[in-house]
Image 1 (cartoon, helix red, strand yellow):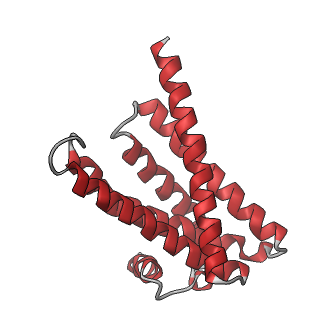
Image 2 (cartoon, rainbow, N blue to C red):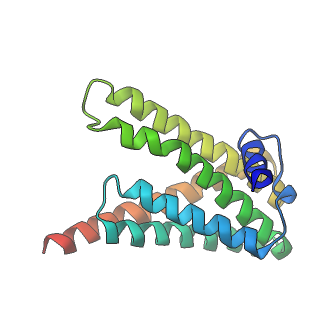
Length: 174
């Protein structure tokens, strides 16, 4: 367990590569489950319980699908396991770091709200940098292309999530 955490911390500081991830279905499923679960906890800060479960599930599935798709298109299906393990593990780590910030902010319109928002943006950018680095190695592409893929995936995931949040809020209000 400590070995896994150490690996993900090193990956978050760009000191490790996705191919160093344990090649194991258990590791992959564990990181996906932890990523989803922490996503639920993060979303509970703004969403009802059921919506948080649904939205985190959809975010996770979208990211898994897009990652598998680009690896399949690039004809690198043997890298899916370790790439997903690396992406989900680092995503879970960043979410874990963000939880005290999100729950510690209270009302974002308060005086310290802009500082907390800045920290949240920095964490989001850090996650994109990490994911870009993972995609760089997984797809054998330049770093800037990996970063572009990470930002595109983030944009697509957020777009779908925000639209679903509106739909779920509307159906809850009806």
